[in-house]
Structure formats: structure tokens, C-alpha cells
Image (cartoon, rainbow, N blue to C red; front, side):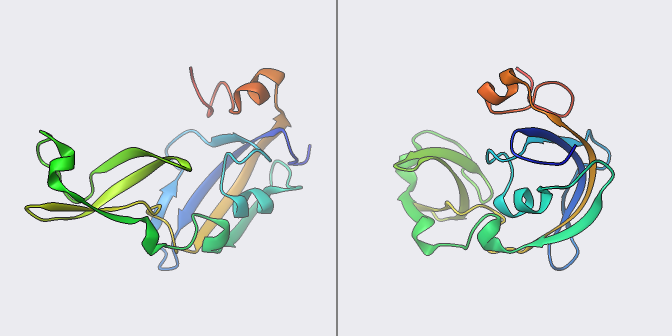
Length: 160
């Protein structure tokens, strides 16, 4: 069966940046299972998966525009330390989810002074070309329940 919209695709993968650093991998874990064509994974990888079959092994480079986007200055925000109330230990690298007009967004603390905290709403992998080594393990039709929930059930998928 070929990878197409509404198929459950199971892959082993290693993700590296242009310097060859491993950013993520399924090695040592269960393979990743997702539903093709509904935005479960980045656009560029979803496009590269179309038409593949179990047993295919390939490499693909995804530009930032088809991955986590271009870094945007407008997603930087400086807030007063008082906005964190009684929270102890606000430090660089902390992440918070905030509600925005476009829905929930994860903000990462990038700078802390006595009075202010600088937050970055860009994805940590924004502006990066992502290089995937992919092995297609399995392709099967998604069940009606998986499609209605928007994610895979069972091994490698989402558990309720």
C-alpha cells in the first residue's frame, strides 16, 4: 500500500541539522506512527512521504518554510517579571503555553533580568533546514475512529 491521505504511516527516522547534529530520532524507541495528509507532521516531510511504500529508505532535506517556519521578530515579547506572580526560578529555557489569537503558542524564556523576562514564541527549530533519514516500516488504512480523533491509536501512536 502506498502512503496517501488517511493512511497510517509508521517510520523510523533520524533528524539532523545542517551540521549533522542529531535533533531527534526514533532509534532506541518505538517507530513514529502518524496519519498522512491531516497535518500530524511538518508539511515538507508529509509531501516527501506521498507515494512511498513499506521498505522505502530515503533522505530528504526540508527547508524552514516547509518545516517550522522562518524566525519572526514579532514573536519576541518582553514582559515584566511581575507577570509571573509568585513563580519561583523563572530561568532561560523555561517554556510556557499562552493563548493567542491564533490559538495556543509555546513561549520560551530567552533572557531574564531583575525586572523583565524576554519570551520567544518561535519554534526552537524555526529557521532551520531539517534533514531526515527515513525508513518506512508500515502503511495501512486509518480506522474511522483514528480519523475522527485525528491521531493513531495503539503502538507508536497516541494513547488515551
